[in-house]
Length: 238
Image (cartoon, rainbow, N blue to C red; front, side):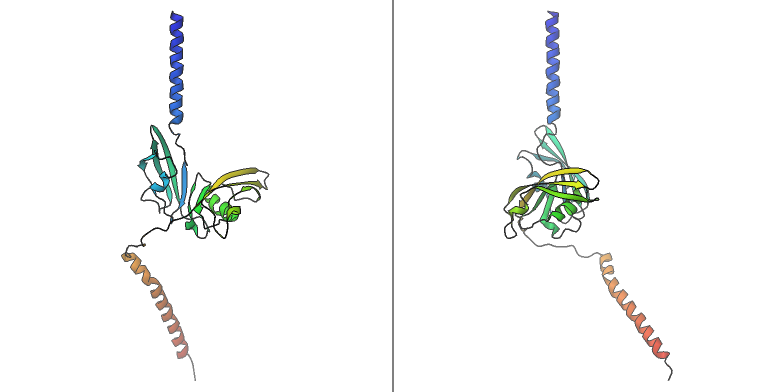
């Protein structure tokens, strides 16, 4: 009898451990990106963030809103039932020398690029500008590029690509002998024009003073040139 009770107790403890393990494993099991990179001059809202997750995912805490145009790292926590997930939103100053950088909406999990469907990003821009900023690819050393899958560039027609997700996989072989394969997805999106006009606050007192600086410098240079010219004329002997 005692033996049976012991077996039942052990079985109950094991079931409790398994249940706790499942709950712990699921505590952050919310499907979707864990980190977002966006440029400071690009609009990215909490509403856009939620679109990357299932409909029953909600915001618990928001440390990002109000700082989207200030470079830095901000944390947003999401909840789905009893599950919680912490998202880091990294606001970068720029995508290096990328032209029309506003066409890049954001980058998820260091590698998944969300970009306007009327903007073809070149291979160089993807690797040396975007992936270098997110630190997905090491670009400080020489390497050879080998294309494995490129559904993105081959899908453009007359400068436009249909909305959708495109696989992009490549291999880099560094001159050091290291080799790495990178597999990601590029999401082409038709960007809707934001309604309304841009209004800027009136210039502050300092801004107004600074606006006169170029004029003051120009006047000062003009006075010096004039003095120099008149001084030369006075020094002429007939």
